[in-house]
Length: 163
Image 1 (cartoon, rainbow, N blue to C red):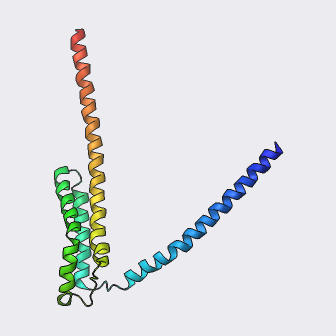
Image 2 (cartoon, rainbow, N blue to C red):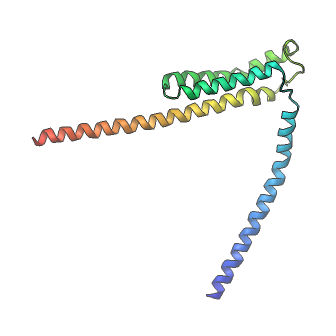
């Protein structure tokens, strides 16, 4: 019995060491990504009016999606609009890259579209995922209602048959 306790204790110690090493590697591995992320957001002048309007658009779009959660057809239109916005991101990026001097203080629109991907496509994809999850929940609720109605109908038919 002592051998088992000793082996178990050794195993737990070994697992604790592995978990500690893994978390240390994750912390050191994620640090450069975190630093790049923070540097990206510090490089943006968030007081520019067009950026404020940009963020307000996403907030309003999200609020519309939340307030219309019971209207599935309207939500599907919002879903398609969000995905269309993501699909048009490359075209929008090239247009804004060519015309940035008319509305921005500096050129945020790189050829690869990182800025627009993070601040345009990212929020639109999050909203589209929220709409999709809401639609799946609504579909599950509808299936449950349908099945209950079917069971009630079968019960009525069997009662009528017995009479």
